[in-house]
Length: 377
Image (cartoon, rainbow, N blue to C red; front, top):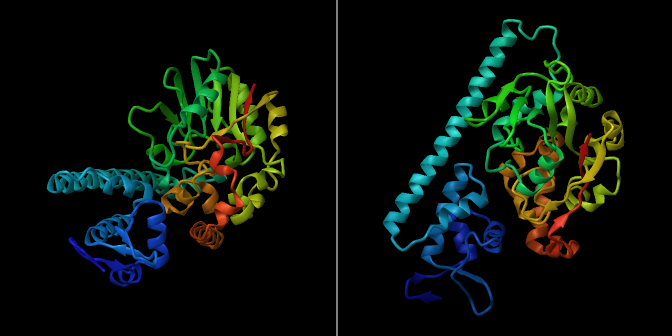
């Protein structure tokens, strides 16, 4: 089988030449990353030289650690001027590598500082919160393109802040969901996460939710976004928020409703270990009682910009991307064996069509209710 531009190769031959499995080639075709130029009369994939060149670019980016979505953007630049396009891609690649180098250097400096403090006894007699210890391990993977503010959820959070002008953001991480039009003070126990906050972000204090270093009623409002489950003592932390602010807004998850495990296909079919992570945590109604709060459901849009655990409910292929998973603490907490098993099964089911057969209603939904809650007091 030939064409004017050269010899077409079978999927098996391409796999042999590039070291990519046939299954991976089929997956790349399915998501539009590397599509073969032609099909044989029998319906088999047939790759042209240009397809092989694109595949080699994809593999080069993969070796550098980029995710599939990011790679797609890099290799899909206009090709009217091939030389100019190649230069533009290389420049973009260099920018991304420099950004990653700078984030890694910041994380290393933060860890060095933490080591220095511990070696000189600064932390002697103190017990770090479990969330802070976790983020010292995984914080550097919480990059801007994986975890960023989802505007529709932010609108709900910021509306709940009411007329507050001064806002304390507890467990602030890199600063997602901090309202840009208010005076924000951040609290973050992890040195790595503090180092990753962008230039111009609100000032950030090293402290835990359970021991906030502020006088009573210091702020108009206190907020905590997707962090309560990492606190050593969630109820004590919420009481502290209530102490330092006249209004409190907390984004969390209702794990008390057993049905949520079945509503989300990822925890239901691939990662049942998630249920064990919530064992012993105060239920959402106990959190609400501690604050005297009302509870609002938070719907997740199908194209959610943030990368929290449930965010890709209508985009299952995203969970195959290691960079997406590294930006979610759940995957670290369940352990590598459970992660490998879940990802392998999901990849197989996407390739075979089993996932689509199990979840036919999902593709028509614009938003999903998966147990996320906003507590407003």
